[in-house]
Length: 158
Image 1 (cartoon, rainbow, N blue to C red):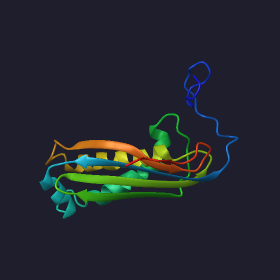
Image 2: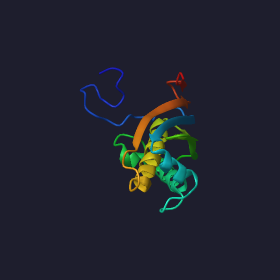
Image 3: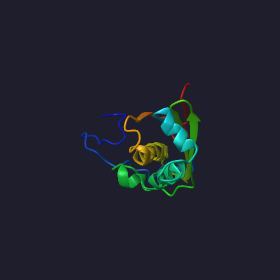
Image 4: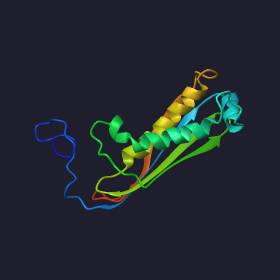
């Protein structure tokens, strides 16, 4: 089972032991998008939703989720995060891009926290807008970059 860090020598799930890993600065960025009707995107842009400022709520949801990733993903370590950013970019006519960047100083990376922030932000947008647009699709959630740690840096090719 070489190469699979969350499996032991018998193929059983395990939490990775990071005891001997060096404490370093860790950063990860992720992105995703949610496709919707142009009228839905316009309502979000103008803060004209009956539920209020959709992006403000989605941003806070993403930040909160990143801080609790260990509660959602079974084998993730509990981390004290130094920074979580969630940003939105309107790509008319029908696309909202979501980007997150997470930073910590620790012995394990924050890739999952960045991915959970994007996912939860997208789900929150869906939840707040589903009454007017059930055709929304959440798409292309992916790691964009990571730095720090033994495995080195990663930068997605465009």
